[in-house]
Length: 457
Ligand code: SAM
Ligand code: SF4
View (tube, protein in one colour):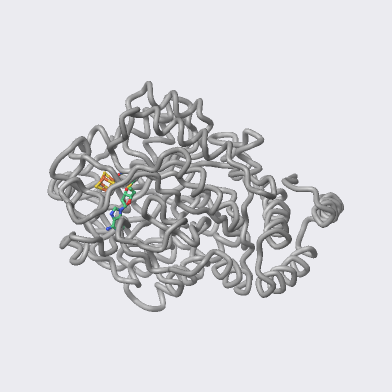
C-alpha cells in the first residue's frame, strides 16, 4: 500500500529549498486541483520567511475558495477508557494503573449525550479504548443507538455520530455501517514501521498491518466517509506527510474516493507517559502551521480537523490556513461532561473554554460556526459528496445551511453575549448568499424564528 522507497527518494531529491520550484508549485496549487507527492516533498523544505508567507497566503486563498468562512463544530464523547493495548503515549494504555477505569453504561451515555445537546451540539464523535465490556462489540452498537435516540427537553438529538474506534474485522464494520454512523475515523499514529513498533509494544494495536488495512475494510463495508490521521510528534513530520499522501492516493485509486477528513493531532502530555512529555520528533508551531497549509493545498477537498489538544491561539492561527472542522468544549474522560474531576482523561487539553465561548470567539473572527449535517442526511457522502464539492455545487448550499444551523444555536442555546456577536455575523453574511438561494434562505430563517427547527437546503 505504501512505497517507502519512493518516500526516501523524494526526500533525497528535495533536500534544499528551491524558491523557483516552490513558487511554481504554489502557482499550480491555486487551481485547487491538489498536488502530487513530488510537489509535497518540495514544499516541506520551505524555510525562508517570504516563502513561508507565500505558502500561507496560498493556503488561505484555497481555504476561502472551497470552504468559505465556515467551521464545522463537534464534540468527542468518550464512552470507555478500558484498553488492552500498550501505546506508550496514551494514558489509557493497559499498564497505567494510576488511571481510574470505567465504561459508561447506557444510562450514563444518555446523560453525557444530554449534556452535549444542552450545550447545543449536534455532532458527536464516539471514542473508546480497545477493550469492550462483556457484551463485546455489541456495546458500541448499543451506545450508538442510545446516543441517536436521546432527545433533550427541546426535542433536539444528535444528528451525526462519527466514531474513532480501533480497527474492526469486516463483519463488525458491516454492523457499524448499519448503525448509520457518519465518518469512521482511525489514525495510523505513525506510518513509520520502526517508530510504530517502538511505541506500540503490546496488544492488537502492535500489528501495523491490521491497522493500516482497517480503512479498506471500512470502505468495503460501504462506509464511504472515512477519516485518517497522524499523531504528530512520533516520526518525522515530513515523512508522515508523504505517507499520508500515499495512503490518500491509494484509497482514491482503489475506491474512487479518498478520505473525507484528515486529523492532525499533536502529541500532548498524558498521565504516566514519559514519551508524551518528550516526543521523539516534536513538531514546533511553525512546522505545524506549515504542514497544515501544505495539506490544504495537496488535498483541497478533504476536511481538516483540529481538536482542543491545541491552545486557542494556535487554533485561531490554523483556521484560516485550512482547518474546516473543530471540536469545542471537549472532555476526554468517560463521564467527563457530567463531572468535575478529570483524572481519567486521555491527555491534557490546550483549549479548556466552554463551547459557547469558543463559538463567540470564532464568530467574532468572522468564521461561521456550523452544525450542518445536511449532506450526510441527504446521502451526499463519499464519491457523491466529492463530485458536488469539486464542481463547486456544494458551495451554494453550505453557507446558507451553516448559517441556518448557527441561527438555531443562537436562538436555543447561546449566551446573550454570543447571540449579539452571532446575529451581527448572520446579518453581514446574508448579502454573500447567492441570489438564487437567498429567498429560500430568508424564508427558512423566518421559519426558525417562529420555532421551526432542523431546516436545510
Ligand atoms: N483506542 C482507539 C485507537 O487507538 O485507535 C481509539 C481512539 S484513541 C482513544 C484516539 C486517539 O487519541 C488516538 O488515535 C491517538 O492518536 C490520540 N492520542 C492518544 N494519546 C495521545 C496524546 N498523548 N496526545 C495526543 N493525542 C493522543
Ligand atoms: Fe488504547 Fe487507543 Fe490509547 Fe492506544 S491510543 S492505549 S489503543 S486508547
